[in-house]
Amino acid sequence: MPSDFMIPLEDGYTLQCTRFPAQEQAASLIIIAHGYKGFKDWGMFPYAAERLSQKHEIITFNFSHNGIGDNPFEFTELERFAVNTYERELADLTALIRHLQQEEQLRSLPLFLLGHSRGAGVCLVYALDHPDTVAGVLSWNGVTNLDVFTDEQKREMRDNGRSYVTNGRTGQQMPLDVVILDDMDKQQARYDILNRIKDASFNIALIQGSDDSIHLRRGSSQLVQIRPDIPWIHIPGGNHTFNAVHPFQGTTPPLEEALRASLLFISQTLSTIK
Image 1: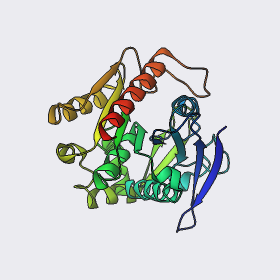
Image 2: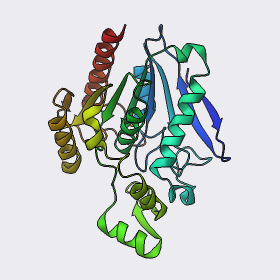
Image 3: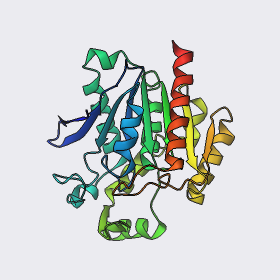
């Protein structure tokens, strides 16, 4: 049975987390990171976590500034969302991993990071920063360029201090403050995934729907041109969420194919490190 837990952060915020214990002897620890305007209880994530937990310990979590507060399904903390920098998300992921490593059983397991969309980019940067601690990264329809903002949004952020992005599901206007761009400018080299990926020593798999957005598929193409050894697994007919929706209406063939591909990649990676 999954269980929720909270991790207090040094600045007074918290990480909301859910653990899906391995149903059999655990072969690895998998952390699932949601993407832009996402959250851990969105649509497919609880189902995917349950499926992956047959032989693996699974942790899902909300980034502390993703906009989710006491209501696990609604964005009620928009002022936090406004200042959700990549530095913040990487600090959150670091705090989560440090907390989990306090438990001997989890500390002894190989660590995989599974990120969706923007979350995949954050996982890649974390692994590039800590290559000796991560066995593999699975990018589900992931970004390879952390600049996910439009030219108009960036102009408004620089000119007015704030812009907005529309949440397509709720219609909310979600604020974006210029501190996000300041962080990207300050740490441009750190966040340059395509430049850094050539030296990555950990295993990576790109798992992507054939109907994912053109710019994300173009980014994946650029990445595998730099690193042809990285598998780019195409999921036929899969869109950006492998055709899953929120509220969750059940699994889909593309989601099942993505899960199968993920488990195969993890199994193959584990066979090389034991």
